Each structure stands twice: as structure tokens, then as C-alpha cells.
Image 1 (cartoon, rainbow, N blue to C red):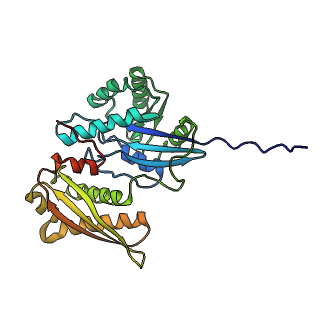
Image 2: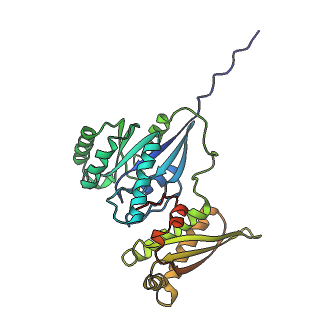
Image 3: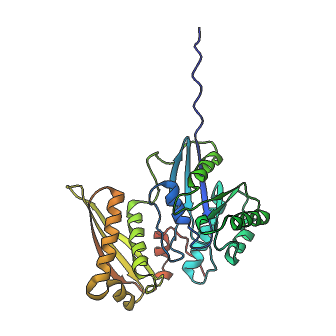
Length: 307
């Protein structure tokens, strides 16, 4: 006599979700809210995300791999063109596209251009209206209706990535929309960005936070060394590269005060992520024309534009 076998467990699901939107609509904040931990930098400055940083979410039997693309804008420099190209490649390669709109801005010129180009992306699309806590309900409903007239969305979500309102509903829907298949990453992994890279991104975020008015985008951070010591602490050396000596002096600050403040903030956050004490040493160097160096683009996960 053959016993009845237990009911088969639900099959696993796994897929890639690209977050597309104009700069500063809250993509990085939403990735961090969905993951429940910091995997990408957040800044008031636009265009802070340069590479396709993936946040990894487990929801029931599904693994959702979030691709936080650079904000889509009108490119002017070589770096700008590389970032925009990377964003659109993320949209075309994903299983599903989440289109983020700042509810306060509505369908402005940037969002309109994104909608026009998204018509060529064949994957299913979710509309996500962010920052809903700052907009009256009637305005939100009108915005959702107008957006769905412009483009065919599978579903519409209203969230506040900052407060978490509506994020759980979005996470559940994304999980249900993922195709059946095995997980791509270990269940306890939250990002495929190496810790060295994430540490550099955190320091870059602190630079923006302390110098958002004074320092332009011609700065990058590289983690030169990462040493795990016997007492379980981590020694990290990083170099902040700028394009001119005048920018170097701004980063250092009077008597080194600015670089010390940047280092203290960065060290605290990196320590929270790695779970061990961190000894962070920052250096500032001038690297003229790094924005035209193909090697720098490869390090950031971007393709170097020929022109």
C-alpha cells in the first residue's frame, strides 16, 4: 500500500525587477525599504546611483532581484550618457519594470519622455507613485488615471518609500509576478554588490551629504584595502578622487574638519552593515580627467561610451 505523499511545496519563483524613473523620485530609498536594509546610497543630489546595484528580497517562496537603475535624464557628459544607457539596458533585461513617479511632480517633462520610451519595453510594468504622504488623495487618483491612459500597466501602487506606507503590498505583488525558477542568490544575501563597493558608495554618499552645494559630480571613491583583523575589526583604506586641487581642498576642509566628519559618518554606517568595528582611513587625491577614463567606468559597472 502506497501512502499519500504530502502536498508538494509551492514552487520557487525568481526574477529581476528594474526600477525606472527620473532622478530623485526615490528609487534608492524604495530599494532599501523593500530589502529592509541599506544596499544602495540615498542622497538629495540627483544622479547618485551610477551602476546597476541589485537589492535582493525574499518574500514567501519568491526571490526578487531589484535593479536600482540610474535616474534617467538628458545626458550632457560622457558619464551621463553611460548612466542613461545603463538604465535603459536594465529595463530591457528585467522580467518586470517598476516605473516610479514622484507624486508631487506628476507626469512632468522627464516622466513624459520616460513613458514615451517605455512603450518599446515589452516586459510587464507596474506603476509606483511615491511620496504619496505629500499629495492629496484626489490628486493621486487623477495622476494614476492619467498615467494608465498613457501606458499599459499591470498594476498601480501608491507608496511612501520613506515611511514604508504601501511597501509591503508592492513587495507581495512583485513576488507573485516573478516567474517560476530557482533562486539566483543565497537566501541570506541582500545584495550582489561586494562589501568593498558598498563601503565606497557609502563614503560617496557622505561626501554629497556634507558638500552637496560645494562639490560637483566629478568625485568618486575607491576602496583600496579591506583587512579583517584578529580582533574581528576591519581596517579599510579608501581614496576619494577629484578632478582639481581646489576640489581636494573642499573635501579636506579647514584643518581637515570636513574629511574627518565624512569619515566618522561613513565608518559608523559601514560598521552597522558589517557587524564589526571599523577603522576607516580616507585619502584625497586629484585625478584629472577621470570622467574620460574607461577603467573608471568598468570599476563602476558602466559601459564606456565611445563618444
